[in-house]
Length: 235
Image (cartoon, rainbow, N blue to C red; front, side, top):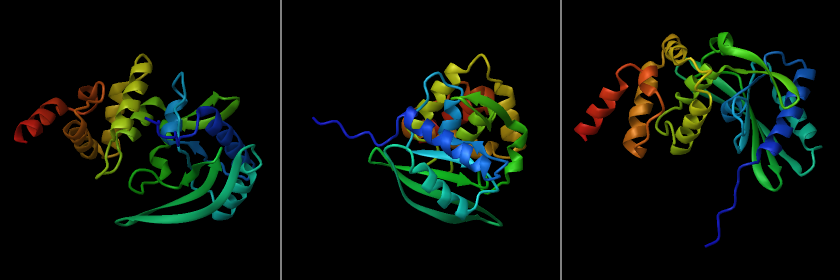
């Protein structure tokens, strides 16, 4: 049987895009630029993850800059710039704007996205205490700490929640960073961000759908073991 074609970019592909994008936007005067998403996880992993997009955080990026960045990235070998767009999503009284650059990398679709908010439209200042300056891939840049990375990866929105792939990746991240990871601080972050119930629901749904647990979830979310068991028994 023929294997399905891999649509995610190899680490060396998206890292070269990140290096170019981060340098360009900083030169454009974007001062609060932070690496985000699964690429933020890769900072703390021996082997960076494959990815179908590059996620950045900034409250200072504009559509004009996104279009200029797309043109800049097209100078990289095997990279084609297709379009740039802005989309605003509302969350009750809050909103989040995403600037998306559509590319083709080696013929595969790839997106560079810049978000001006996190979670459900919360300001980036919520994350600021947990962002640290990192030096990797021949570049100095800002990225969420290990603890903030775990907190963010537990907070995917329903109805999708935490997918099997994201759970597997998060468990690999936790396993690899066990000695450096303060799980008590992860719990504190969830509490300070007021998303503990949200994450609790994600963990229960993850087990219900895929029979997967996040490593040390009982040290991050109080009484989660009993709640998962109760939910399982009710079904």
